[in-house]
Image (cartoon, rainbow, N blue to C red):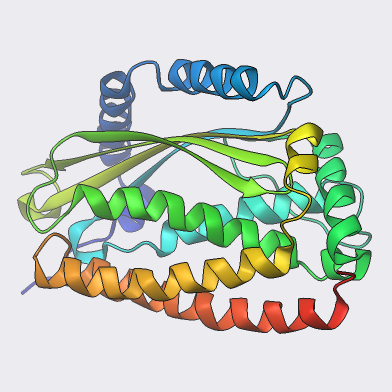
Length: 279
C-alpha cells in the first residue's frame, strides 16, 4: 500500500487542500451557530444566579482541529490545552523568567491571571504556585472535560455532526464554559476517500473573587486527590467504551496513555503540595 499523506504534509504542499480545510472549517462554524452567544448567556445566568457580580474574564478562545482517521489522537488537544495553561500563568506577571506564547485564537487577561495566583498562593503557598501545581491541575481538568465530550461523540464509524455545551468549576474562583462540536468528512481527492475528523472548541474561563471565597475551604491537595480518582476511573471507562465499540482503538490508546501519564504526574504534584502546603 502507498503512503497516505498526513494533514500537515498536505497543508504544507497543497493550496487546494488548504482551501478544502477552510471550507470544512466554515461549514462546522456555521453548523455550530451562535456557540459564543450560548456561552455568554450561560455565563451571565451562572454569575447572576450565584450573585458573583465581580466576575472577570481570564481567557477566551476558539480553535479548530483536523485529524485524519489513521492518526486520530487526543494528543493534539492535550498540547493545545497545555499551551494555553502555560500562557495564562506566564503572562500574569507572577512568574519571573517564564515566558509562553499565547496560542492563536486565544485571548488572555494577565491581570485576572495574577488575581487567580494571589488567591491560590494564600492556600498552597507562593512556592507551590510557582512550581506549576496550579497550572498543571487546570490543564488536566480542562483536558478531562473536553476529551470526555469528544469521546462521547464516538468514532468507531463515521462521526455525525454533534455538539455539546458544558460548564465546570476549576477551583480557586475559576469557571470553565465550553462548547465542543465535531463532524467527519470524506473526499475522493484526498486521503483515498478516507475520513477526516474536525473538532471545534469555543471556550471561556472566568474568575470571581466571591466564588473563590466560597471555595476557600477546598485546597489544591483535595482537588488533586479528587482529580487522580477521576483519572483512574476514566481509564476504566475508556476500556468499557472500547469494548462497546463506541471509540476506536486509536482513541483508546491515545486517551489511555494520556490519562496514565496524568495520573502519575498528578501524584508527583500532590506529593510536592503536601510538602509545601500551608494548610
